Amino acid sequence: MTAFSNVAAIVQKEWRHYFGSPIAWVGLFVWTMLFGIFYYFALTFFLEQSMRMAQQGMEFGGGGPKLSINEYMIRPLFHNMAVVALFIAPMLTMRLFAEEKRQGTIELLATSPVSDGQVVIGKFLAAAGLYLLMILAGLVNVALMWTYASSPPEWKPILTGTVGIFLLGSCFLAMGTFVSTLTRNQIVAGILAFCLFLGMWTLGWADDPMAGPVAKAVGYLGVTTHLEDLVKGVVDLKDLVFYLSVIVFGLFLAHQSVESQRWRA
Amino acid sequence: MIEVESLTKRYGRTTAVDGVTFRVERGEILGFLGPNGAGKTTTMRILTCYLPPTEGTARVAGYDVFAQPMDVKKRVGYLPEAPPLYPDMSVRDYLDFCAKIKGVSPKGRQVAVNDAIEKCRVGDVRTTLIGKLSKGYRQRVGLAQAILHNPDVLIMDEPTAGLDPKQIIETRELIRGLGGSHTIILSTHILPEVSMTCGRVVIINKGRVVAEDTPENLTHRLKGSGTLRLEVRGPEAEVVSILKAVPGVLTVHARGGHEGVVFVDVEAEAGKDVRADLAWSVVTKGHGLLGLQQMGMSLEEIFLQLTTTDSSEAAPAA
Image (tube, rainbow over all chains, first blue to last red; front, side):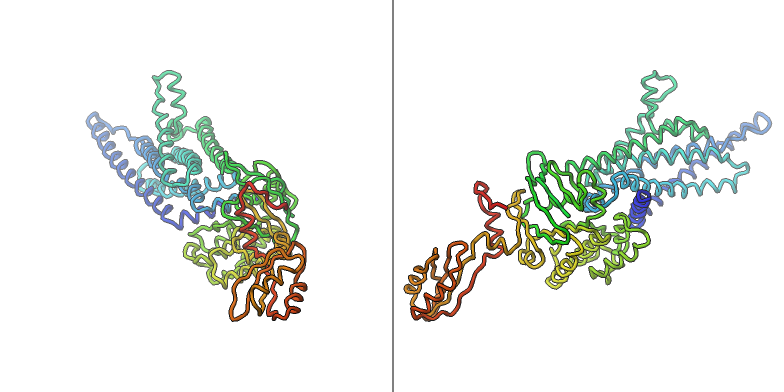
């Protein structure tokens, strides 16, 4: 299938750019370093809390409640990583189209028998693939817990949490791909993307159990809202649908943007 | 092979291409001439499906550029004015990528890439990063990318720009060799190049076609048989009057000379060959005819005349 091989060719080319330049390496480094730092803080906090609980337990007689690693450590970790994703995503996507326009290579892509859709999807998949690699690299830390914890954490919430973080980041990447098509300047693309992601993030703040229906509706549109259940291990179809819809919407916008520029060129 | 009919492209209020019509037959090499901003690049971009036309039609290899762009793109190789290269890829990786997106089958890919590398003589630098190559090499890699998938049609925007004389000759030979099996449109400012490589020429100015013909026909059409230059040994005034008396002669200008020899430019009526009469008249009056030369209007002169005339004057009909 030519469509598939075209997309594959684009993915391969983008990966070559990512790994041939500092982008991928710096991204991987920053992500794993931050993940490690947050992990360390989370672990320290967890240990302190556990000790405190154990002490309280001793005062009242009998052992205290064992704190769930998932609840007290893994979940905050995922939330922190979502914040890191917010910052890293613009850097992964800002060069996708902006650089092609600046280099003039968009003319090569536009006059070759590849469709605009294939180009958009290929670039997005390349960014998402790199992002996935970063997540997996970070999870190596988590794997350590199985060796050292006396009662290892539940793996299902970790799995669903990973899926959640991946989907959340991919939403950013899809929207970031769109933003990259709007300008030749990578810096502008990066800044605009970040502002857009911030908007997507803060919509979630409106979500509140006490709030009225309008606030709840707005809150539903926030990307972090749908991470909650996934991190707890609850796979709710509506969360998956939300994330996939945003991803598709972002790619759709990117495609329309690329096409419309031919008419205006 | 290529049929362009009333092609028009407007950007807002500017008209870049205005009712351009021409054809290119299979195997032909067509030269595209025009000053900067005439609409050559825009026309080429429409033919390669980079831009859609505002009005009119263009068909390449039987496919319409607007309705069937994918089919057109498969059959067209395009070398833009600035070759679209990725500076951080090696030549081989770049051509490999191009082979993939241009639809070269996986089996034939290696062969196609090696073939193109050989033809364009970039074998020495196949593992070098494109960003590190000189202009000449980059141009050739760009050319390699255009011929990679063995397209029926090649569209080249100033293919010899920036090359040194040796490379220019090699490139022209390459292009000439490709004609016949490929249909080629090439745009250029280097007018002698057009006479050397192209069978026909289209001259564009301000978005309109002002001339379409072979270089020789254009020369004839625009100034009859052209100016004749005579070198005569004899007194200037007398020679001039003798020549003026020859039937069919329009103007006679003396152009200086030395030691009793005078150079005279004679313009005759269009279509009339007065050379024999001129020679006869000079010799029979006892003067020495040292030289008789036809000064055809050079392509430069044709180009300048067609492209610097006031737009209010009528352009010669194509």
